[in-house]
Image (cartoon, rainbow, N blue to C red; front, side, top):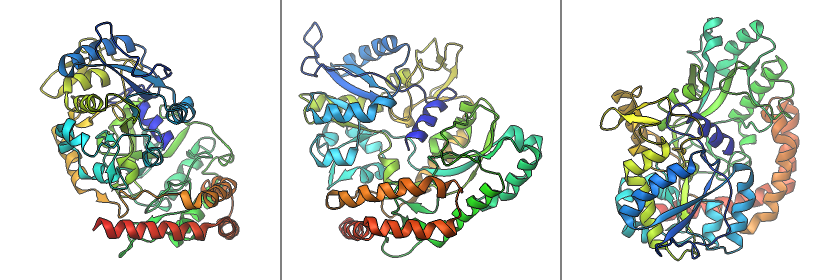
Length: 488
């Protein structure tokens, strides 16, 4: 998921996302007082710090101070340091106010984050009333809410994305690519005959084949729920599922035919969106991408995507970009009040996400804007992890019809049968560690098609059983059954 987040960050260069953030602070929010004695909230964000950070925050803090009487000290921690630094900040008991959530469920369960169930209704009611129910349901932990989520891509969908320059050059018919990897076989073969030295399907060692599943622990683990099954959701091993095994066989056939890079299982090679080193890749899209608009802008060249999985509202989508308030904060009410302002004040949010008005953009209507020459990468913040995408101004290229389709898709997208389910791992930590070790030995080779699944899958599944898969499945199913029964 992190890779997808990084791609989404890149997509900002063309439409409504951008730089992220970097570096931390050891000062506590207790120490953060302006010269006038006013409260300054210490807030941690993930990603790369905008180059014009001081200018952005000077403008933003003036409005925040005018509206709610506080200012924000926004500290950035880069992606490369986030997984180490933010847990250290949390575990040390450092006093801070707000943060982009790290290990949301686990830290909420151990009391690191403030319970916002009531606070959100008192100090962020305007925003919470606007949020789709899936965000609230997907972020409940043991019946309580510990986050103010960003309203962004309320559903996610895996797509197969094609490089239009090659589609047109070789007159490839991608219209029949729909709902399966296998449906793309002929297109990939035709391209490979023309361009044998360019990756037909650009994947590497982190690739995990998608399917009609939701994954309680993510795709790295062999636990899944089939979305087209009726009755009570059942936890299965997707690597034992006949349809998924068929997918792995297709990938192996592609590998044998040279349609997948020969070093895919060990390669960390990137295939830039803007490059000409690939024909097809797998991407994640949501309603705020307006079809291929975001990807095309990020690539600076036309791209066309075909659906691979259904549009689905999941727990992972609901928790994609959460802001939490630390239990160490002395300013919990003001922190929630600020998060409400950030997500309901168009002037504040657009100034952060699009950059400085008059330099990077100008309004051309009530909710439309025109990008100016001053709109550059790393001079604004990202949309996906800053604030409510529904109040962001859109470029003139986004039509009213596209916006209507966006809203319709959010309303009609399928909801996962396990939306809101968060597995408590306490009783099976050893087994999960053993299972992770097994998957590290097999997953890359299987998912990149580098090995024959008929030979490898029996070995994988036998080793998973030895590692304790059945014990974890039993515990997970028990918790899921309880979750389903109490959710009715």
